[in-house]
Image (cartoon, rainbow, N blue to C red):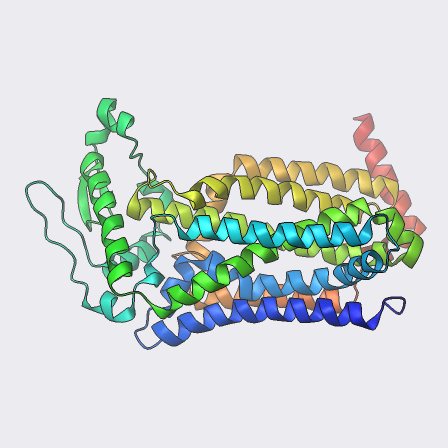
Length: 407
């Protein structure tokens, strides 16, 4: 880092600090507003992709990407990389415009979350009694409590999933099967439960409009910052691959030395789209899978994009390993990716019961401690390639790869 200008380090540090303060502000607003009513932990777990992930894993990503960002900004701004200033300015502009457009699409959707309702309104909510034409609606607090309990039982919340597609409800005989309906708080046919889910969605939107929470307002301000943060990380990863040779020419082996932190940061960031999927699964039980919005449409695309991006960063790091280890690790990476695709439902169910609606303080602490250990490894500059420099280790790995190839 001695070859980088002080102004580059200050600029990146200031930007990353402001980003992290925004994450803390949102979670702090939730704790301050809902803490006295005892709902803070439950709402933070329900929307863990907002209130838990960014303050914890977001810090690891910022620490891991700080040095690469400094190297890129410094080299690009000082004209040491081809079209550096143009690419730097254009990338930041695209990230800013994209953050504004995406967050505006999210906020303009008709789906509101529970944390956007004031604690006073949630405490006063007594539900809605059923009528001849409409099923009953249970109080919101009671619904969340029931979901938290049942998320850790047997197959988790996936056991209660059901389609609410109009064509399926019209022609499928399974639509008359009885199932526990969370919005109603009782067993009823899937057809009636879909009606209750639509009514529950309208009730959440009505309560959020009549008695909005302060946390909801803070969330609306922080949302563009989060989207900008995600786009920024994506851009840094892509630019590092694009300008790898130029950075190696300027800084020697430095890019290889920081690649382990990038791989760690990218791998942890992959948890975010999975938490999103767990959240959407939970909300589908409350408001119906048919409640499409910009958020539900974009979420699967984001998961795919982050998966490819994570593999890109991992392979970027593996280039610093001996060729046999790099080859074996790349195969392992594809195997893990395939397992993730085929076990997607089990993964989201597990996250829903640990860091999602079924999670608790212990799970959050364990997650924070694990991420803290990874942050410490990045700060201390631990690099597994140092361990693999031993010729005996390399020969052993080479032997294993050749044996596997012969079989």
